[in-house]
Length: 517
Image (cartoon, rainbow, N blue to C red; front, side, top):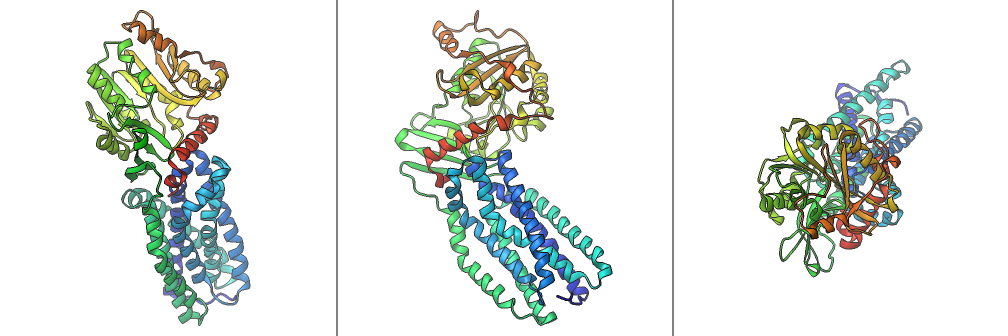
């Protein structure tokens, strides 16, 4: 194909097209995690899968686009853009069946194959745009370098703008499915305009009608695509009473009337549970944490990092008259806790990122409860030496830090448990570990850490309470662990089995269709 001559309007239109398709690449990549996360979580594996698929698609697109641009005798850029827009539009419609199809593959393979099936076709087509644009923008061999540099710079700039526009403005206001649908429709409109320009400028007649047909098919399918995200699969005895997509996941309140149970979930994790009839907490690990004010009765001020359903904050204030500040990253979780679990703040209720807010909090706190996890995995950056040092600075001299950590016991050989114990030991001189349900492999482990003696002996505990806690005391061999730092933190890798367990539990309990949006 000889490069057609572009006037100023045509060149500006081509540059705008490259800019917009570059923005679309990042919109699809970033929203890809939100489409997959409710089913496979928000771990590094999901991000790695999406980034890998994006790079694979762009590499294939660059290669195929270059070959096609050199071999074709007529411009076909509009058709490429129209096909990419149509395929992006189909992603929300195909998401649920693809996720359910890949479920048997497990966390890592399932996330990767899902990303391949959902995003590779459209991203490959978007990758083909730049080679075609370079061909169209190049008048002579001597100007190839300038054309290539300009096209890739504009595509990258579009990706930057698309990323910022999505993260700072669109996503907080519009759902991920709606943004994908809007992106698909915008590309179809762009392709149709470019097809008419191709026809007028270069007498190319084979792309206008296909673009119009794809746009018409998209409009016909649009109600079905939008409806597919609104209707939840019917599960006997299960009712979703609250649902909100936030920046951090899909937050749901789910009632299981046959079990007298109300659950608070974030993606594939249950982060709160209460009885429907009495509203009382159903997470057993909180019974152990709730005895800390009995062990140390002079607690006046506490901080909870990771609100969940708010039961622990309520127990500390209502039963022990402790003023409780809470720190929760997800406003949708805080909203659900207030509306459906009766949570009422007794202190400052902070909504923000843990590491940032911890650095700006003012102590001292007599008790800090660290209970952060979502999407089947805890945020590993909140369990490093650096974070623990910040928390230590917020503690009163006789203060206690309690960390809830979910893991497999593995007969006392868990590297994840050992790593948390080893990391805590570098910051705090004293440590006790309690297991929520003795004898179970998959469990909540409560780490109590301080720089003063936290022995259970010589405390105001009743004989029954003391016996109950002693039954749950365990020893963790710190020598098997890795020191967790901001520089080196293998916790997510060590907790892969735990993430799989969470996903399997919620899929079996609630049905995979509820998670697969």
